[in-house]
Length: 313
Length: 250
Picture: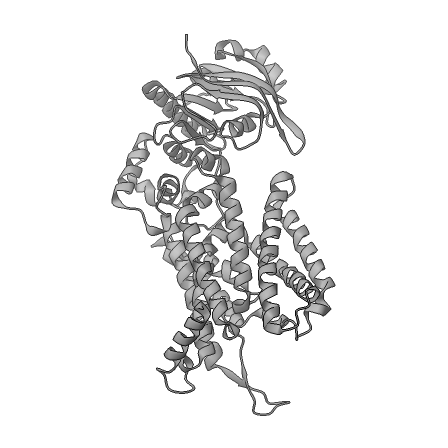
């Protein structure tokens, strides 16, 4: 019902603009809304990922989604599903649940053993990729699932149902931050100190892992498994070069994520390459997810140049 | 006779399949400074972690203050860690650090209000630091300044027990001395009970009321510093080459 309402609202919005302009195209409006929502969640948790040294962890979660997709495809095939749209409805919850379970298992094994974090994450990373690779040929058959879209994402392929899921993800992220931001950051500096301040350290850590798994898996359609980690890490790293305190860091990361999201979406619309070889004259659009990431990396290098003087002021 | 604030009975801790504390029995007397000494790896920090319920343990830790201590609360236990694990380049200021711990239902990113800032200034004054420290990055603080900031935090609101994990490690002598004087002054003025992990035996000798020596996760000896820090006892705990050495100043 919400999807139908959103479809109608977007269609009414499209009608306000001249034909074939950016906002007249429903997929562009959906794509813009998707990058705004993904930018908000990635920006809001980016400083937590960087501050808590979880860049490799979030990268592993993104790659584990590959195994989640494979498992979803397998389950859907065994259940006799053949319709492509129906396939996606089956894959998504399995992929999300798989991501959450893997994230929690990594945290649990890390807690129960003396192994280094990187080692534990590396083992799960390898296991999930291996499992995904076993089923690669099944997954890669395009009638079941578009593997390119999974790896690199494309905001313009986002549906109204995806947008609604992203909207609820923004709400969940907001609730987490309102209740646990201070506790989670304090616990990342020293768990004993946090415990003495009545912080539920384990609850904070496990809740954040569940949230991160949701963010990574639900954002895949927009930015892709290979690029989502860049959205989580690079804007926060850029903001850390520019800001003088944690309050600035949070808002600057959110601002940078939104900026690169919107800029990437707009650039992918306005820049087209003309294929001069095979299909002469055919216009080729650039990948929106890729542009966002390249843009954020460029901003990171710029921040390395201007950051020191900004932080001194 | 001084009554105990905390009684530790037959405390065992195992981490990663290895016994770290093996039947520790001890009492922390109300209003006293107890120094916890021993080799690295003898279980000193683990004992503090057990007291804040960070590690699972067998045995009993009883707080005689009429409160349920299934979870430590800032009103009863203040903790000063040896160091913070802050990611390099993270722009964490002193105000941020205090805000994260003190602002319970107000996420830090929404800002620090005037009243909260005034409260932070008062906290810093308690540990002889000025309000200009609030906007200073934590990474730019000296070891002694950071320890005083962490002490200021641990002292809020007014805990009955203060736990300090090697607070002077890596700090030069003058700053360490100033820090210990501050602790002794707080103990005298407020009567706060202090458990302090320290390797500096001369400081322990001067400021502690009670000494607890740990060796391989067991209490090897305990008592007043005058009895515990004899040359024989120090040799038993730390081995040859150990002793009390005076510091000389020009």
